[in-house]
Image 1 (cartoon, rainbow, N blue to C red):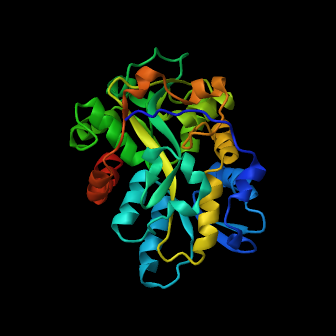
Image 2: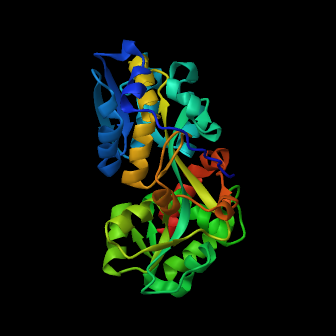
Length: 337
């Protein structure tokens, strides 16, 4: 799947604010989100636009938040208004009947949303692609996933635990499988683990290992690599020849959100050009609206060439949702164990 993102004149913050529903003033919106840098950047770039609205972050990893959404399904009013989730998790929560079907006419900034990011049950906030990362001082540039997920790297290969699903996608593509079938990649992952591949619990731990030279290569979103480059870590990226799996992070509104008016206002602010531009600068992810004005030099670093865009691969969210429990069990018991 390729994106044709055209730049238009960016709206000013004041103009964007004028479009937000007035009824949301003097109210509170509760945002379920990951913690760390992402939550801080939401405060800086989105919450700051919500004049007169108290923005409260309920910070946890995605799985506990999803479980809480399921537990609250029987309640007339839930405890969270909008939830930050990956695209496959947004799909999963929609299938469970836990998300509101969005009325895009209530969000002025939605007119500039890339069509592929306009789901009935959620909105794409930012996107990037899964690429190969490597230290050029420690190894030559790999061509793709097969060159990276290779036992020959031994303990110089790092694998991020919380990126389980996407590592399985990459391994499947490396082994000739597809986004519709992860099974072919499991043998490759086991072989890498037996050869000494290191497993890191978080993106931050993986970055530290790259910084110290404990590992030489791994797989991660291009946007994160840009952040680490900005932080002075010696790392380069390659768009895998086997295909570049896409990552979309977005937001859904809970079906039983306690304040839907404020939730719509916050979602509209999330799509404001200024918020999207600042996320590109601060976090290295691509905007999902067409009127975000990203500097050309930054776009070159965070985006993909026309040839690389042809290799962008959308994920099979239905397959991932259907097989997630079994694949998580395999990951924990067979791969990590």
